[in-house]
Image (cartoon, rainbow, N blue to C red; front, side, top):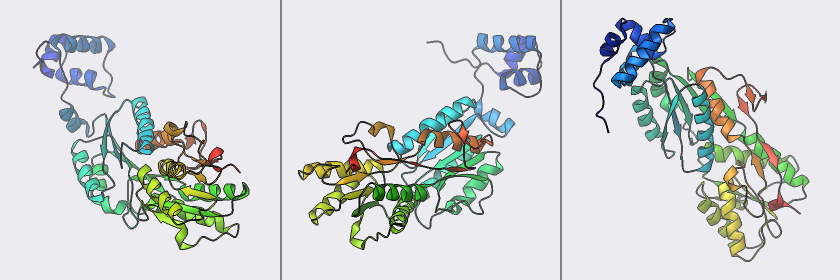
Length: 351
């Protein structure tokens, strides 16, 4: 393998027979025009000398790099993985390279990550993290201020009961209508014939879980259905959390006709627990989830859920950070900076 070249930009300029400024503009994509023949000579010289640009030096000169920082709650979660896929696609369309960091839902970790990200001078930052009640974007206000002062555009995913971006200058929110989607699901399940329910509510401190539970309760209330406190089972916001919560519900005896799990992953755990007890999911106990994660499409029985366009959410978050979002979803007119879910009823709740 050839040794890495130690050629400098000055060497490239000398070989190409142009000024240092011209060589810099030709290689860095400056908006100032460089004659085509000069650009061609500069790029040929750079290839011959195996010149590699100093990205950090370019960042100092430009104010930003050609990178986008994506901060997610847990990249192993298919929800965040799908959002990341969409963000990477949109960043690629914009000529940006993506760096991904996971916070694990730790607000302290988020502040630390953003401090490091600011030093990399990204062109844009997307915050797609799991926030806790009482822990709004204001908690990372100083870190966001450093990013925006350095020229980065910042967008954040928030829930429709969050309000976390209020007063945070420079943050472009993209509102995911979790509460509204859960309310629509409750109405659809009632119309399907279900009358008794329980809720696998996940972590009660998570904003997303709280919004979905609140919306589902409101949707049932609109049809005169009230749930007792015992109908809400809290657990980890994971597949195993759904399994554990469903086991507790079944151990209590007389399970309801339908169970709402606040994520598809939790719903999958619930299906496993139901089968383990010798019951038939969708027949003895119905199960519905939320998200419509693509990798769970082959779950049996097919899962009723609220479909979110997860990849498009990631793509729009990038466009909002870059200031290029036109308010559309998959080519159709969107609702400003909001993303709505769509109820999908399948065999897991059939009657």
